[in-house]
Image: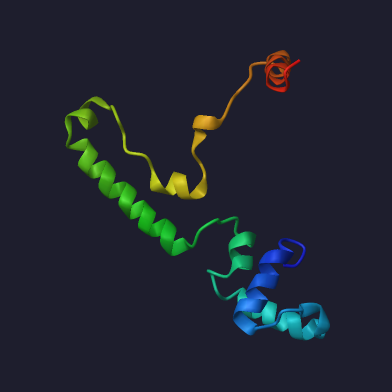
Length: 120
């Protein structure tokens, strides 16, 4: 756990166990407490290990919100034509919005864009 995200583990130790300097305790004691954090899915360290930026409950609520918004949108004129689809809350929360992604067909295209960005 400590190799994955030391800061998250330190924060969890401070919040949950009021241990502000975990290095002053025996290793087995800290390991036991860290194992206890693994049973809480909303602990910072478990979220980090699972690659989550928000809690599972929040993601589930966002998914429900997305489904409701899509159901309402389908019943509108825009929905029938496929225009103005509502933005996904799940994508916003997990930063999966692909509008800022740029693709290149070749390495030369990348180099050209890189030179534009750095001002060469």
